[in-house]
Length: 103
Image (cartoon, rainbow, N blue to C red):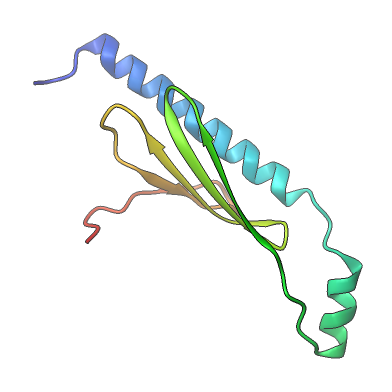
């Protein structure tokens, strides 16, 4: 069954909203300043353990999973609802990429 034009418009709006949210999260994460303790440890050649956190945002249109390590966003995965394919957003430049043949 092919989607109708109103359904395609709804899918496009959901995809646009999901992408806007993911890019906004990425930009917000990039505004943080690195901790001076980490800089001092890097200068001495010692290793500082960084905390990691997984953030999950869900609304009617999509589920967004974000991984942050040391306060910096490492990955953003978006799973639109309604049968649309999942994609990843690059935290550095906001580009989307899809896995075509994921096994």
